[in-house]
Figure: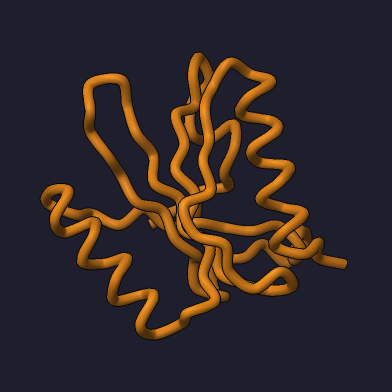
Length: 114
């Protein structure tokens, strides 16, 4: 059984803080099943965007696990434009901004092979 988005985001935030990282929920979406988009900030000011992977990326052994794809975006303006497009398509999305601290992104998100 898959946990609610609200629960999943809360757990992500707590894991980041306990590992010396930072997280902020920029937009709260649907409590039960909102899609999650994660903005990864690095210490040099760079940013990357991760969003839900297509259903074909899921492992049948772990169907409840949330999988993410990295979006290749040129700059901050492209990142903002992509998120605005996603909000128009689905107003129930969640947007979480994170800095993982000492750990890498793969310690917090399951990244689908592209």
